[in-house]
Image (tube, rainbow, N blue to C red; front, side, top):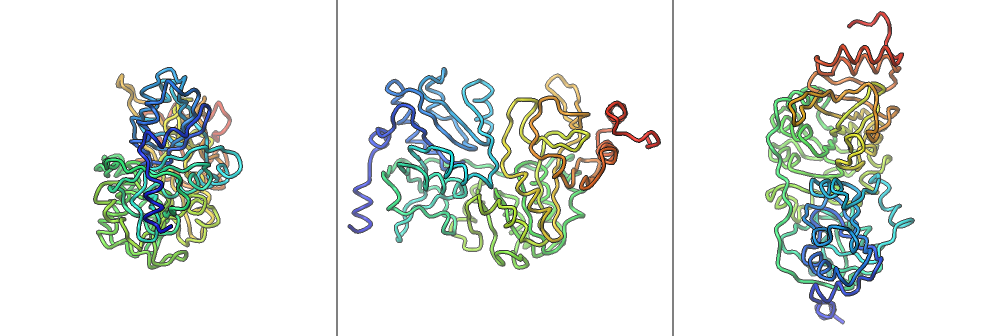
Length: 443
């Protein structure tokens, strides 16, 4: 059977395709723009026929029909391993659950421990070689398709094609094809950085050098770093990142992102996921200079460490005086996920001349107008994303301090020095009570 005949034989409507789902099945929607809008709606339409269907996703924009149609969660049980703003609200309402996951271990989880009865994934159209393209979800969606008992694809012409074998999904691996109306992609353009974010970035920036390979996480500070790089005299920077976004496009347009000095994948930018603006998607579409790989490769510590001058820059939410870092919760409230922060902290630290930075504002103001410190005496329910033994640099708008190899009292002194001035005295008192403050230290 030729490709086109095989393609036509697998064509189904969304309603026909979702009939394969049974009570208790695990259904996987993949990550970000792989969310299958038409299939999700068709599955939700079967609500009254189904019980306890478990749906798994990661950073999905929403709204998801299977959640919205079932407020009590009797028919569909939603699970995510990294929260978008929508998924955070779902968890806040008690209508979804979180799965702790370190991205470098993702393929191991799927291959060894997880069940995926049905994968439903949006893909770019099939090419002349008979392959669909997993687009900006390739790092996560590839192993989902590999491990699923049944694979259903929803073709979306709006999705860019990412270069590399990891983004390809051969027709022979697909059980059903749905051609739905094209739906717009989730766009996440880079907002202008705040003054505080610019100040934090200014403390990280002196540690960058020509020829460095850069990993930028999600958030205002990494975006601000991208802008500073674009406006700087730095040259010949490289990309090795779990999630690519508009910051890299800004660096490319400014002529800073050449990848020509990379010690691993010389001349090629490496990414696992991609979320950004339409311009960003157009830049990546079919671009052979930027190649997608599975997250178990991109986030592998030994792989990251092969990039000389590897610089990892990620955001976090709070740090305690012992140097523990929380990047995913406020207390026990899940905000995002573990993601790949620890992967890149460890990988960059292990690289020749590598450094990792965890960045945050020193304080925040709540809805009642009350200011709170992000540097805390000790955590009281906050989930530790990066343990104190692995932390390198921590940066706020008041400076960047290196905690690697530091004693408890040195950590307390360093972190208090970059805390908001309004909280330094009470943090010193807490450090004294916790016996991690030298009596002769300066106040």
